[in-house]
Length: 513
Image (cartoon, one colour):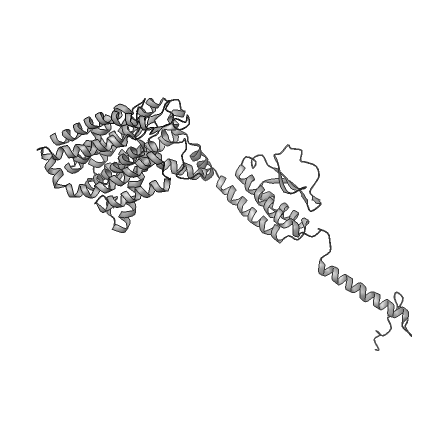
């Protein structure tokens, strides 16, 4: 226990002393984060490489412990080979974040660095080896470990949006893992988490609102990555069959935030790695909370998740399952209270019947496209539109195409929503919709796009609507020529006879012949 206190105290004092030094150096070198009044809400330029003093304090605490005669130093020495195997992974993720702080690397480059660090950690023994009590083969353990470690690193990187949030949540999560390590008798895990807790507590002195220095990507990625590693080690010591459930609960806020961000951006059709102002802390700020108050609210929620995670790790399987259900219900209720419009719209589409209407419209639009492509005249295009109209919610149509007009000239008298779909110059389709169908903009957009595209591509090849069929016209011309030849032979040829009168038998066609 004395060794744990020593590690925490040394990391605390080192970070407390080094952070102002690096803050001053960043200000002189211009390594600062400028406010933009949109996502970056601070009022002045703030240094952004707080991960450097944090990392030095964490590693320095172990170095000083090894130099003392405390028993913890001997334990660290015994596990030094394993620690050295994990050291490259921590260095890679820290370097990745530092490069982004200094030069703003691309998202895929950051992800590549995180994947490389996760591979090194997996090779060093940090593995998600079981899920719900089932042991995983290496070919499945590897991708799950990569997703877990990279996800935790990105989660803390994304949630670092207001003063003290990522550092504070990291502090509570580290304390929880330290307590779990002590409860399970895992002294090596306790020694790994103790200095991180001390360093984060000291860093909060400068990072809590109003912050004078930020973690930066070097700090947030490192914290998330280390906590992901410790969570995987914790799950290996858990007595319940739920395995990774306890680490998921204690890291619930950052992990939930990154999952929500991915879902929101997918539903909006935005890049997954893009930035927006829809994170959990932004939603709290939009509801009128100050940055300090929003951070405290999220601290409280993180504390609740930490308490449930400790209970789940200590309880038997049946009781831990009940805790998991309570946790999931609370998370669902919290997401609903945040009021994301993306999920409300998805709920209406999935459960309100809108998806069935969209599917029906897509079927009718596909049939309409095929009919227009097969049409040879504007009239056949009109017939295709008229047949598809009921399925698209169209109650009245008017078509102007290739100099021809179809449909009644007067507009309906019910003051229905009207949409004019352009085809070419002086060619268009007028559509009047039912009021309930006009409230579905996606359906209208799909209909107008398909109708305009198909008519435009077909318009140059259309024949006049009421011209005779080419084969019929050729047959008529041939019959006319034959009739003209017969008349010529009748009038000019010798011995010809006049055509028979009506009712008389034609010569040469009698029954005797």
